[in-house]
Amino acid sequence: MKNKFIHPSAVIEHGANIANDVSVGPFSHVGAQVTLCSGVQIKSHVVITGNTEIGENTVIYPFSVIGEIPQDLKFDGEKTSLKIGKRNKIREHVTINTGTTGGGGLTSIGNDCLFMAGCHVAHDVKINNKV
Image 1 (cartoon, rainbow, N blue to C red):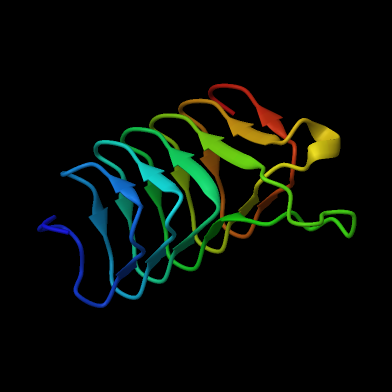
Image 2: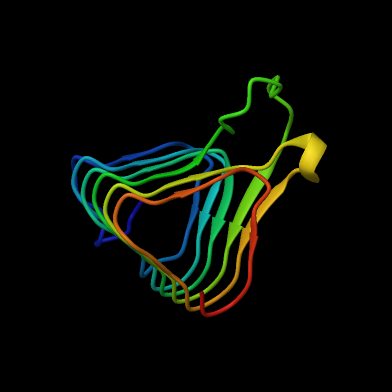
């Protein structure tokens, strides 16, 4: 990967789709099924995994975990996803999980939202714009 904004200690799995102007901070991990659109900023110590798409100019702060499997005991490895819109601010220690098949398979977040430190966005949630 030849993106000058990716810290050498970051782990980017083969298959990740990352725009050329994305920045990924130290000790962050980006999974193979992740798409990071133009202008996304990933600070240090962030984990992004699963079938996850993050829209343009979204900023994710340290110690957030995005796109991990649902916190649902019925989940059995089904293919589900997470779609995050544009210009969102995801502050420190936020968790956002992918969907479940029972809830439609998709967790979705609109544009221009703020997720304050420590919040959890559960599986199958649908959040509109400017929340």
